[in-house]
Length: 258
Image (cartoon, rainbow, N blue to C red):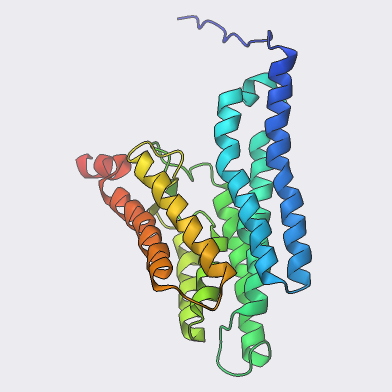
C-alpha cells in the first residue's frame, strides 16, 4: 500500500517564530546561570553557587512544557532544542555538582583533600561525569509512560544531600558508587511534570521538596526538624514512586506475560 507523505506545516506566523525562539532563549539562559554558578564555585561561595543552580533547575522544569505548548519542533525544525537542553543539563545537573563534590566531600580516611582522599575523590569525579554520559546519550532513557529508566544523572540532588548530611567518608563513598551503578540499571525514576499518573501529587511533592531544600541550604548547618523531615519524606516519595513503577509498570507487565 502506498503511504501518503507526511504534510509539514509552513504557514507559521512571525509571532509563532518569536515564541519558539523565545523558548530556545529561555532554555539557553541556563548557560548564564551555570556560568554564574562556576564563578561562585571558584570563589567557594557555595550558597550562591546553589542559588544559581536552583534558578537553572526552575528553567529546566519549565522549558519542556513551554516548548511543547509553542510547538518549537514544528516552527523551527532545523534548530535542535533537545541538544541545547542536554548541554545545559550536563553542566548544571552533573558537571558543576561533580566539581563541588571534589571540593567539599570526603571519600577516604586520612587528611581531607590529600593522599588517599584526593586520589579517590578525583577518580569518583571522573566516574560521575563519565557514567552520566550514558544517561544523556541513551535513547531508551525514557519509558513509554515518561519515567526515567536508570538514574537520570541528577547529581545536583545527590551531592547536595550528602553535603547537608555531613556524614562519614564511607557513607559518601557508598552512596556515590551506588548511584553510578544505578545509572545503568532498569530502576525507574519519576519525572514530576511528564508522568501523568498522580501528576498533581508529583508536582506538589516536588514543590515541597524544593522549598525545604532551599531552606536547608540557606540556613546550613542549622536543621529545622520539620523542614528536614519534609525534604526526606518528599524525596523518599519520588524514589518510592520509581521503585514501585519498576515492578508494576508497562515494561514489567510485558516481561511477566511473555
